[in-house]
Image (tube, rainbow, N blue to C red; front, side, top):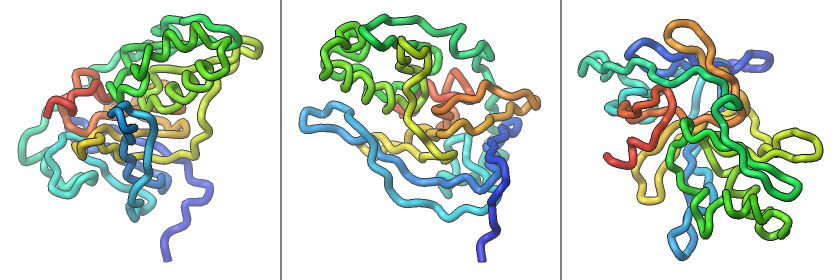
Length: 226
C-alpha cells in the first residue's frame, strides 16, 4: 500500500549541482503544449502520471537516462549548476498594462518562452482592448496558460489576481514537437535554494530541467535551442 501523504507539506529543495528533491508526495504528470491548425499554442494536454512516493528526485542537469528522474549522471559529468536567478519579488519586477476591468502584470525575467502570449496581436494588446468580451476572454486564457507565471491578470475592482486554481502538482512539459521542456510547478509549492533560503512562493513557476538556463533554477527557454 502506498505511503499516505495526508497532512504532509509539499516542497522542492534544490541540491548544489544536483537534482531537485521533491517532498510531500507531489503528483507528477506529463503536460504537452497543444497547438491549433495554424500552429499557434492554445492550451495544455495532460499525459501519463508517474508513480511517485513521498520523496523523489528530479533531474536538473538534463543528462539523466531516466527522465524526468535523477539517475546520478550529474555527478559523473561534473554538472555545474549554480543558481543565478534574481531574488527580487515578482511585483517589484513587473510592468503593468491597463485594460477595462482588468490589468496585466508582466515580469519578463520569469519568461520560459512557452509562447502562448504572442498569438494574434498578443496578450498586451488584448488587455488594452479588454472592454471587448472576446478580447478579455482570450487574454485570461493566455495568462492562465503561462506556465512560468510571468503574466498575471488582475481584477481592477478587487485588486486580486485572476489565477487558475491548481492543487500542488508538477507537470513535466513537452514541446509540441516532443522536445523536453521545463518542470511546471503549480499550486504554490515552496522552492528552497541550495543555500537554504526560500524563493518567493507563486502559483505558477517553470523550473529548468535541461541544465542550460541562464536564470537557474527557473527556465529561460534554453531547452528550445537543444
